[in-house]
Amino acid sequence: MADSAFEHYPPSYDASAIGSIPINFAGADQEWPGKRARGLHISTGGTLKVTWVNGDVDTLVVVAGDRLPWSIAKIWQTGSSGVVGNILF
Image (cartoon, rainbow, N blue to C red; front, side):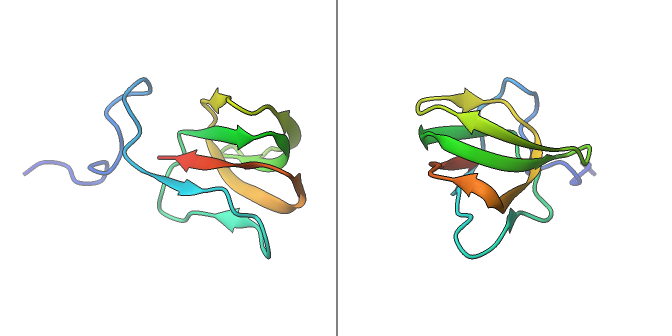
C-alpha cells in the first residue's frame, strides 16, 4: 500500500504546483491548516507580513510579477497591504 501522507504534495521542490488559493487577508489572518504552501505568485505588489514554517515572523515588500518559493504558514492581516496574488501548493 502506498504511503498516502504526502499524496497531495508535489514530488519535489521544482515540480509544478498542484493547487492555489487567492491571497485574502481582508477581515482576518490567512492560514491553511493541513496544507503546505510552496510559494506565492504576486499579481499586485505591496507589503506582506508572514509567519514562516519555522515560526519566524517578517514583514516583506513584494513586487508584481514575482513567483516566490517561500514556505509560509500564515499571512497576517495587520501589517499586510495592497498585495493581490495566489498561494501555491
